[in-house]
Length: 264
Image (cartoon, rainbow, N blue to C red):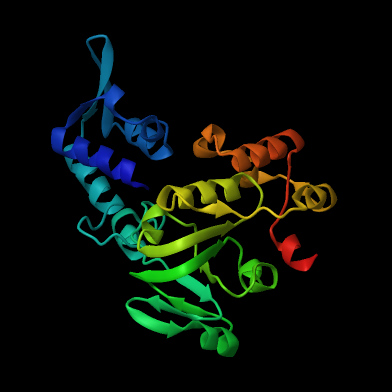
């Protein structure tokens, strides 16, 4: 179960009776809730013009609650979710953001001057959970393969950054950079990531090659699954490059993967 279930059943446990309209539809329609009604542990009763859900068998409902949610005071982690909800994905958890770095200079990370060039040449990359990053030029790269080869296209002056998982505004707020380049897939997800980065760095620029249209005509692929969904920020953006790519992708139902720029 999820946090919404926990909150609903906890409210019922404490109040014994709740207006039906106050219970989320996802809970009302769930098999678990319907089984509680069938077992007459809960009952739907008329209340004015509407209905209320009442706990009829308090002991049975308390047993159900304690079995479903074994522990209440837990950490915001996957193990905490398992203990509380029996579901590791029940709630969003607090993760330490893991970043991968490549570069050919030294950069300040966590108040240490790190020889990223040596790390890159010796081991291919440098990884850290950063609380501060200082660099003149930073390039965020969406996909791992492109990140590992980005200097072939963009040169050696950037600190190339790839985050494990999606980039959130909070996870990059500790970065101090004079110039920010964003290198992503040319699709709705890539545009969404660019706009999230731009909320933190107003000077961020989306990398768009001069031969983009030619590459799109030759190598674009069909949109499928989550890539076909346009977020609200992308839909409402007035950024000229976002508008150009958004309309092209929507019109053709195709997108260009960034990897092709490394291998042309």
